[in-house]
Each structure stands twice: as C-alpha cells, then as structure tokens.
Length: 254
Image 1 (cartoon, rainbow, N blue to C red):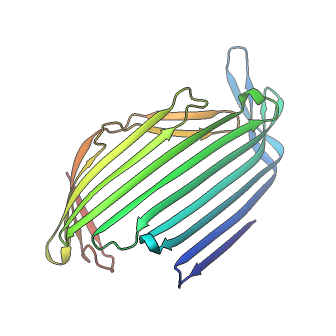
Image 2: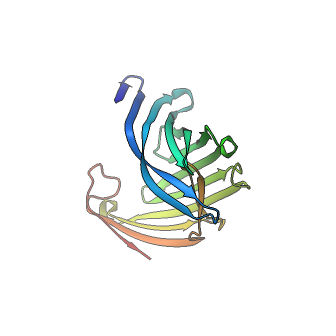
Image 3: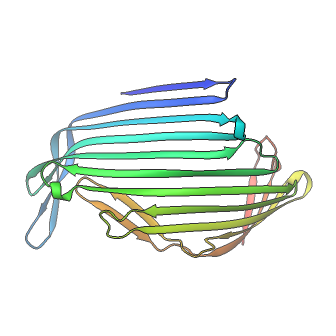
C-alpha cells in the first residue's frame, strides 16, 4: 500500500512531496544458515511467518529570497522487520535506514551557478537473540560545485566531494576528498561544439567504498579506483548547447 501527496504553490514557488508505503509478506521465502565447527556455511531457503517493510519520503523546496538562494530538503526512512535462522535458531531482526539531504543553490545563474549541500545516512540493525551483534554506522557526504561564466563562450568549473565513513563496526574512520576542476570553450555557430578540459581527483585520494547492512551481517567493500587523471572531451550538439530544444549529441574523448 502506498500513499502519495504533492503540493506546489506557483506564487511562492514552494513545493512539498510526501510518500508513505507499507509492504507486508506472509510466508516469505528467506535463507536459513547453518555454520559447522569448521566454519563452513550451508544455506537453504525456508518460509518464515511474516516480513514487514515501512518507508517514508519527504521533500521540501522553497526559494530564500532575502539571500537569493533555493533551499531543498529531503528525508527518507525505511524500517524492516524480518526473521532469519542461524543454526536453527529463529532471530527477529529490526533494520532502520535514515537519510537526510539538504542543499542550497543560487537563483540567478547568468554569471555563476553555485551549489552546496550535505547528505547523512544512518544504518542500524538489531537482533532479538544475538544482541551482541547489533550494529550501526553513519556515512556523511558534503559537496560544493561552482561554475562561472565569464562570457558566452567560456565556462570555468570546480567542485569538491568529501565523504566520511564512520568507524563503528569497521574499526576505523575513512575520509575520501575528491577535488575536480574544468574549463570549457564553446565553438562553432550557435555553440554547437563544446571543448572541455577537466581534471579529476586532484588530491589523488579516490577510493571506492560501499557499505551495506544485511540480515545477519554488515559489509564494507573497498574498490581500487582510478586516481588523478585529466580528460579532454569534444562534444557536438545538433541543437546547440544552451538551446531549450534538445538534440542529438556526439562526444569524442581523449
């Protein structure tokens, strides 16, 4: 069952969106794990009595006219009540995931386009039997982007993404700053051509990190990612960059 609400005020340019959802499954199929004395794991599918998921999403946007800025806020929460079996022991699990996003950007973008924001993500898992295995972790992301238009032919850009992964359950806190910069030149009639020189990961600190919370474990995946690099791109648009009508676009990357 889902419920949606949308409200937009064309005079104040304020918008509000909300969705509520509930999903109930009877006799759900889940995995039962058996671990022997040699730590070998066997998994087989079994039916459990019930599984319940509740979620809510709220989004609000409004202009802040005194400072000529737009404000956007969103909240997302998910709750799951499930059952798992480890060595034939039934364990009820409660999992929560909460996230909040807040962002600001300037309203008048003729000379510059600026945006800043933050995102916080909290994961928590609790067990009815193995309470010592209860886990939670917090991920943070902060970002800023700026594009400056000194003329109709040139664009200067820079941006920073800063991610912080908390040490709970993983033993250490990790921070990943990603700094980038670019310069763009529009070419040809009606700005149909775009030549862009961009540098990524200027601090050479890129590490891909994915964290997830499962029924009976949490996982962190670390990926060796491409480090600092520079890319030259040429793009050609049939309609022309900056036109309201969208057209076919072709890119050549070096």
